[in-house]
Image (tube, rainbow, N blue to C red; front, side, top):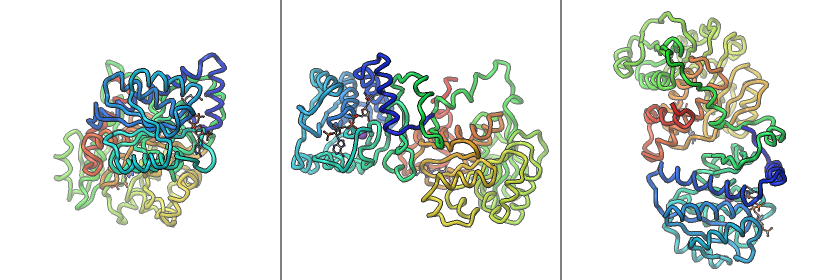
Length: 495
Ligand SMILES: NC(=O)C1=CN([C@@H]2O[C@H](COP(=O)(O)OP(=O)(O)OC[C@H]3O[C@@H](n4cnc5c(N)ncnc54)[C@H](OP(=O)(O)O)[C@@H]3O)[C@@H](O)[C@H]2O)[C@@H](O)CC1
Ligand SMILES: Nc1ncnc2c1ncn2[C@@H]1O[C@H](COP(=O)(O)OP(=O)(O)O)[C@@H](O)[C@H]1O
Ligand SMILES: [K+]
């Protein structure tokens, strides 16, 4: 999906209104989309009917919040709206929707001075979901008046409640769990330095005509991984399909003491729709791996097979044997090869072998593995994630999945794709192994490797978000991601 600047979005909104859709209606669609996202968030977190506080500014960003507050109030939720300006400052579409909200009986109060906000901060709120509708794409210059106080108040709620930003986190100074953006994602929201403010990023279709979007310039170097782009990758399975339709994936990895990594990776490949999955593990751990994954054919000698994708690395160890095996794969494979973890690190002095491979290669480094591969410092990688991913893809002729919040997928000659699903609960051992298995599972059933990597990072993050909502980020473990993959798939496919 295209990513735009605030100016480009304003132009798209204006063109849409000129084409006959009134601003009031656009705002209604935006606000309804926001309400729907809040309902889903609350439902996933078992917070249905919990108090929701809307904090609104005097512009159209506040207008979206009024529509959503009104909608949830009609559903019977305990909703309240705090206005960070006098009522008399509201105008246009926002005023229209404010009046409707007020008429419907949504409790509201105007907090017009810093003293009001100091009092609000001292008293706090019992709301478990707080909505930031203070500033959107119309923000400019230094923060003026009480908006700074209101922003500080909302940001402080992030320490105890779920925070949802409307369109963009206000002045990029509110730490949101979820940003519900209108129309198209905005450039600032996908920049690496802002991941802690934006949280997950969801897009509301506000009815901008497709031809206007196609004509818009947008960012030519970046694209946003959106479920609507992924759905076509998973067409209806023919009724008479059999396992041979969906490929045979080989997963190589594991070593003494590290049997879990390959177990999780190969199970993730199965859960991603591969027809058959085989694993090749050292003899020493065969008896540990095999019973854990009855759906996988586990071998302790290199098996023969008509592989459609090969994945190597999880738990493999950084030995000379690993290096030899990985170099052999790169030299001989004709099918997509996904390299993760140790299979990446052992190539530090052999990057030329990646460039020389004749098969599609997908590398899934976390910033540490990326730094090790190129002899860089992790801080330098993180300081320019976009540039680094692009550089690696150009240099190695491989697809690079640079992991971490705001995972990037880069391939030479095309825009870098950015993913905004996932959460810090994934910062625990094994999460990456699951991702490598998903990519291989998807590539193995014939999805082109770049698209497979994009779909995999989205599904992986989505599974983690569903799991965290149910079990809490702190107690998330990698097998939860595999378990929640089914539900993640449901978000892009009804079957
Ligand atoms: N019809 C549409 O186009 C659609 C728009 N949509 C929604 O509208 C949003 C854009 O709305 P917008 O243009 O009204 O701007 P918005 O972000 O609400 O802020 C403007 C207000 O903030 C104030 N302000 C600004 N900077 C400030 C600062 N530094 N410090 C303090 N105050 C500051 C400024 O006050 P001023 O000081 O200028 O009086 C002004 O009143 C967009 O993000 C989306 O959510 C959707 O509904 C889809 C349809
Ligand atoms: N804060 C975070 N936000 C989003 N995703 C995260 C976060 N922390 C980790 N992840 C994801 O979890 C996975 C961790 O992978 P990795 O570091 O290789 O773990 P392991 O080696 O233990 O399997 C990656 O896909 C990464 O993008
Ligand atoms: K906002």
